Amino acid sequence: MARGWPATLSDGRVGVRPLVRRDAGAWARLRRENHAWLSPWEATMPPGEGGTPESYVATIATLRRKAREGTAMPFAVTWDGEMVGQVTVNGITRGSALWASIGYWIGRGHAGRGITPTAVALVCDHLFTTAGLHRVEISIRPENTPSLRVVEKLGFTEIGLAPRFLHIAGDWRDHRIFQLVKEDVPEGVLHRLRARQSSGGANSSGDTRG
Image (cartoon, rainbow, N blue to C red):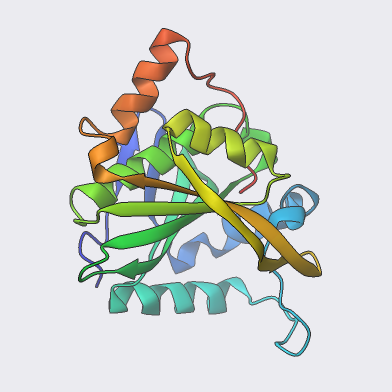
């Protein structure tokens, strides 16, 4: 298992917990109802690599295997205990790197409530403390304004542009690359988010489709 996994975290009405098989119904409903909202930002298979989306059962089986191997942490995002989205930590690398990447999405009906920034902040703090990582990376398409607002609110630093980085919606798409390192947030990512909201430096609206 990944160090620090499984984990359940919360702040007020927002929570993250391990994604499990019994989430299949809620997950399928969310994906079905939010297809148009999410599909412009979802990774697709390039020609020759297979094009059939994995079922939830296959997806969770893969993620659970990666969690056992210590390379992933698949979280369900909850609002008042109801699943409303997902945050997935991938590519956990230990040794001299101590880094991982994060991806996230939320249903359109719960966007704009500050849920995604809070959920990502909770996961980042967990990675920097309990999991012992040093660096977190998030890659975002330049056109994905809601997702860009999340990293802005959390104080991620942009470190470059990766041309034709990921196959999405039938073509190779550029991505802006952002990172946060542990030294950037000595008091924690959630603390920084709350401080910015209190000072008016970060609006609480604008969640991501991720």
